[in-house]
Length: 161
Length: 217
Image 1: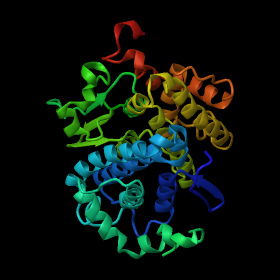
Image 2 (image 1 turned 135 degrees about the vertical axis):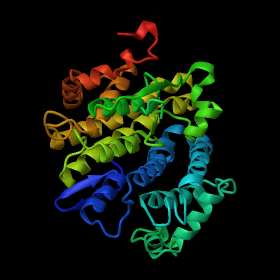
Image 3 (image 1 turned 90 degrees about the vertical axis):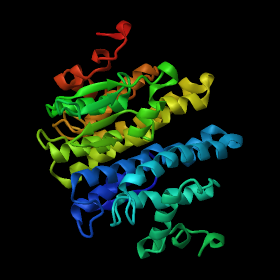
Image 4 (image 1 turned 180 degrees about the vertical axis):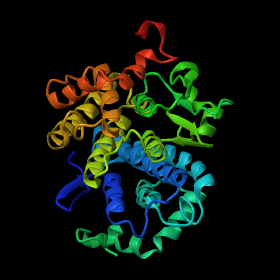
């Protein structure tokens, strides 16, 4: 698909971020990234798919290239706003400390990077208090800090934390 | 749930995402009721207040089952798999499961969202066909390659999986957008084999409660 990420692990290569995460969950089950209860698992996957399938693909690099430079910002903003309008509503019934209940799940792994994209595309997140507060709580966790775009091997100097 | 206790599927006959879930329900022998949501009539019934309360993304499918409402077709299918595990729609082996999810996500996240109705509306009428074709061609180029290593009779090995539920509706979309599928012999032959199976036949867009008369089989 000529996209990142791809993970080489256990003798195979997997791509599609959620397929990778579900494989990690099944082969390295602790700590859990999906709850045990099937209904809660459905909520986690629903939120993850909303972001990974319903927002991000519409504002990724290759789509924006096709849209044309003068429309890119509005296009990306529209994709994110539509998705966040829905997500903010959904979180009313699923969220606790995090997206689904009080444990970090795959849904939270999708949320934080998407909020970062929203900020990059100058989307006003005031209409999304639940998204914003969950994002804030997640960003203080170590796993979200050490993996931040500003701390990667390939982070350009001027963007490095 | 209806008074009878049956699950309720909110579906549009031609929605490829709805078709994936219809196939899953059929394969698992789950009896359900359909509430048709016409994506075009009345400005799009998915935008009604009632439906928006059900699915804030204003998209089909949505499934009311076991006292909850789930949307996002793959989340629905995985829930059905976990609560009604036979027949399987995901293999037991984690590496094969990864292949199934990878292919499903490629289609459901990498192709279909780029050529769905609401995106095409934004693209503008004169560019719609090319845009949709590009989305499908890019995805199918990748998928044809991936299937070289995963496919047996079907997308992953010799059993029908979630990946196959994604493939058939996407090929139907490709045909609708006049994509030449000659470069994709593996996709085409798997599609052909799947289409003869009963679950793929009874759930076909041409046989739905809301199929317009002129498109009915």
